[in-house]
Length: 411
Image 1 (cartoon, rainbow, N blue to C red):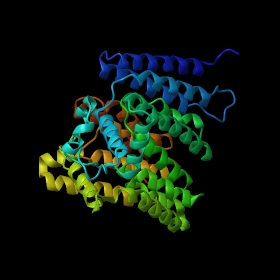
Image 2 (cartoon, rainbow, N blue to C red):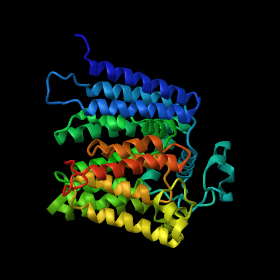
Image 3 (cartoon, one colour):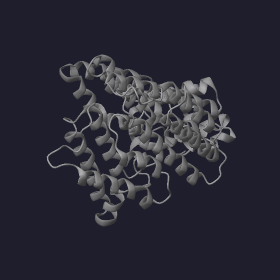
């Protein structure tokens, strides 16, 4: 059988993405290599989502080929040097293995001098105890027990990255959408670089959060469990709890009860250190982390320059709170995109890997502005990163017919 033009285009784009990722792994002009991979990625996504799955004459790109290509992409970037954050993950797993509470003891504590090694010099924020939630601490401990090397720890997070792609395909299928739309996350150079390349753990929380939202209507107890796992892996998932409870409808109390029960359970091993209450230390660590200097901000940076820091913080909180309240009646995954999009534009810190909070849910609510932002976010200049995002959002709003909601995707 002769492959159709759509399949030929797909494999050509896959080869081009792989070539750009290899250039990225070799360290030759990394921003340009990433941008080239991102451009081919956007074309590949547009090619797949425009295919009419109801037309038998149109050749489809099978999910198994997308998964195979996604696996190859991730293997390609595994040799990249890890992010300094991975040194922090390894350190916290290490002291957990030694029996210390990471919330109560900062990495710079002289108590740890006998167990330090050269890799521990890379640990960021050594003067502050852990600010990661407890399920993240379990993940650090397990990955450290599995292997003390950073590359094997990256494999641990990459496994969750692949599980997230599979869960995304299943959730799309349950909603009558082509499973192949999982390409939105599977082929993303940002997802490949952040997780397999640098060792960030966004895929773990994303996997649990997707399951919580996907199962809320049918399995409210499990939805509560997965929502708690997501929130106890990365704090941002707490903002999506209202969406999970809304999706659970009349059984929201059961979802909330199971989530709270698991949340308390996973905190218990960290509640005390040396007969002292450690939760206050954990709260202080999180609060201290929030005082870090702004990085790659947009709305927050402009508001701070014009009105000062207190007004900028108040505006950011108002934007996120408004997005949460206004999206409660929106379709499920459109609401997720609205809330997390508000977080990204209002946050004082927008590291590239934070866009992975939002990226998997774009498979349900195809937003060109955010897809483009997943490519431009790595550019050094915030103006260059955000200009395409805001221009596309403004164009989408301008082209929207009067009287129709901004988001029309069903979830």
